[in-house]
Length: 223
Image (cartoon, rainbow, N blue to C red; front, side):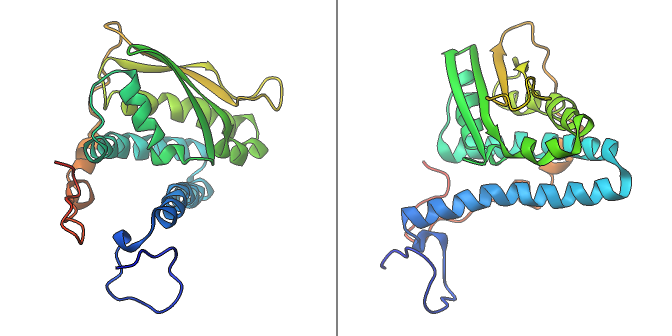
C-alpha cells in the first residue's frame, strides 16, 4: 500500500496510522502533543470559572500526578528506554506530552547519570498565564510544578528530584530562558511514593489498554 502523505481524497473506512508517511505522522504527533494542552486549558479554565484559582491548582496537581507516572512507564516500554539515570529521565521528558515540542522549547544538559539541568527557552503555558498576573504565574510555576515534577522523575528513579534554579515570575521581565531546573539523583532524596490518584488511574481501562499489532504484524511493544 502506498503511504499517505496526508488524508486528502476519498474516505477510507479501514484507515490506520500505519498508512501514513513519516512526515504525516510527525505532523499528527505534533498536533496531538498540543491537543493535550488544549484539553488541559479547556478543563482547567472551566474549573477556574466555577471554583477559583486554588481549586485549579489542586486539580492540575492531581491530573499530572495521576497520569504522568503511568504514561511515562508506557512510553519507556514502547521506546525501549532503559536504565534509571538522568539520561533516562531526560529521554522521557523529551517524549512527554506535557513538554509538547516547539510549544515548549526545552533544552537539556546532561552532566552525569546523577546530575543534569533542563531549561525552557520558551514556555507556551507561561505565556498563557502571564497576562493574569503573579498569582496565576506562581500557581503554575511553583505550586503545580512542585506538586508534580518529582512524581514524573521518580517514575524512572525513586531517588530523583527536580528543583528550580530560577523560575517565573520572570525577573527581569522578558527573561530568557523562562525557567531552568536541576535534576539530581542521590540517597538524600525521599521517595514520594505512589499517590492515591495514580493508583486509581492505574485501574482504568485507558491505563491497562494494550494495542494490537500493526497491520503488517509488527508488535506495538518491541520484542
